[in-house]
Length: 177
Image 1: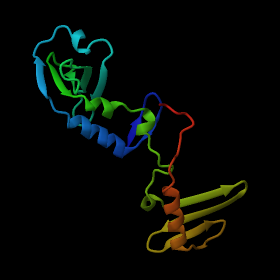
Image 2 (image 1 turned 180 degrees about the horizontal axis):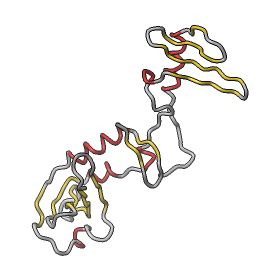
Image 3 (image 1 turned 45 degrees about the vertical axis):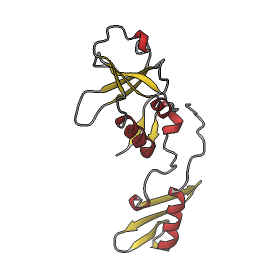
Image 4 (image 1 turned 120 degrees about the horizontal axis):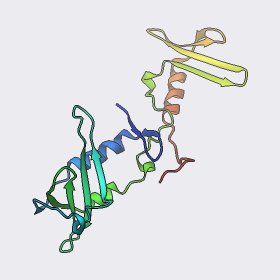
C-alpha cells in the first residue's frame, strides 16, 4: 500500500521511512513501572501538550496514543510514557525522542515518479503541438502508437523508464520542516 502525509501538508510519504518509524514505536519496551494510578500527569510532563504518537487503522477502529513526557531526573536516559487510555505511567528509553524528532520532509516520498517500471504501460511525451505516444502490447513489446504506429526499441524504452523512475526529489519548494 501507500502512505500519505495529511498534515501540515498533503503528499506521498516514503513507505520505508514510515515503516521504520512504526517498527521503532512497536519495538519500544517499558524499562520501569512508575505508577499504576496517576491522577496528576503534570509531574511527568504528560499533561498539556506532551509529545504524542498515535497508531491506528487496520482491522481495529481504535487508535492507541502514546504520550511521551519528561526525562527521569534520576536517569535522563529514560522518559516517562503512558498510553492515553490508561492511568499507568512507565519509563522507556529516551532515544525514542530522537526517532520521533522528524519533520514532514523527513517522511516525504522523494521519488518523482511513484510507479514501478513494470506498472507503466503507456507513455505520452508532449512539447507544444508535438507529441509522441508509446504503448506496451502484451507479448509484442513497446510500440509507438501516435503520431503513427511502429515497433519501438524495447531496450531503449526500458532504459528511459528506468532513468525516469530513478529520479529523486532533492528539495521541496513548500518545505514543511
